[in-house]
Length: 290
Image (cartoon, rainbow, N blue to C red; front, top):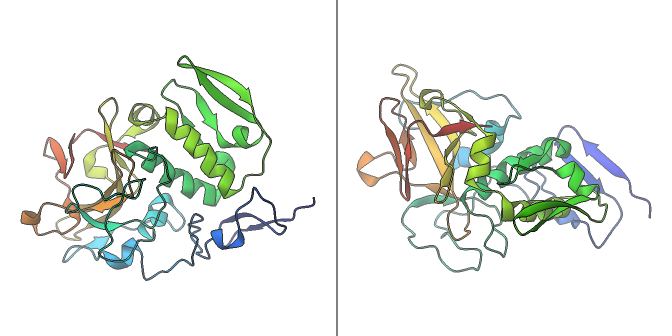
């Protein structure tokens, strides 16, 4: 069966197939956004994005970003309507429901897989998929480096008695459905520990969109920096944070404590020893970067 592949540079769209196949995403799975949020099964709405819903704190401006960068992509990530509750992978409500300011318009899957570090991996990988799928690779906790290009080319892996072994699998096209299956297998064997080994430490004062507050281990946690704003005179920075948690749940924008009066924005205090979020407190030294 002959397939025609189209690569749209302007929209960063990837490999849209012109002929039907039972293993390929239906046409409506491809978003129309120029920023390529390819998991969406409905048109991308620029009115329901992080940048529109969350104005910077008074007197502040969002930090400048390179168009098409990971941070720019996160700044325009789609959100579900105001008031949407956070749900677990099984459809049940997260407890508590009073710590989120918004929910990302991103599927969580039907298995208990896409937890905290997995959500960070998912968003980073989705961005890379929209740019060039052959750059996608993440390490397992064992240290094995799993490339998506190898995986869809037939070089899979299996775990036996905690040993990671090569495994032959079917050769597939790099569609979004295949990419999601790759991630689901990865989520089983990657986590905060493997992610902490991949990312580089950066000072909190230099925080940028796309950075990760990360503690590797068991227990560990990961919170993604979605956006950063700064006051032009004082140079005070503020950040928007997002997380998944345990069990796997929808990725949500975190509320700051009500007494701060900042809503979802978190003031960056490089002289503090910690960064407090509703369900985890990080050391100020635990900021990492891809």
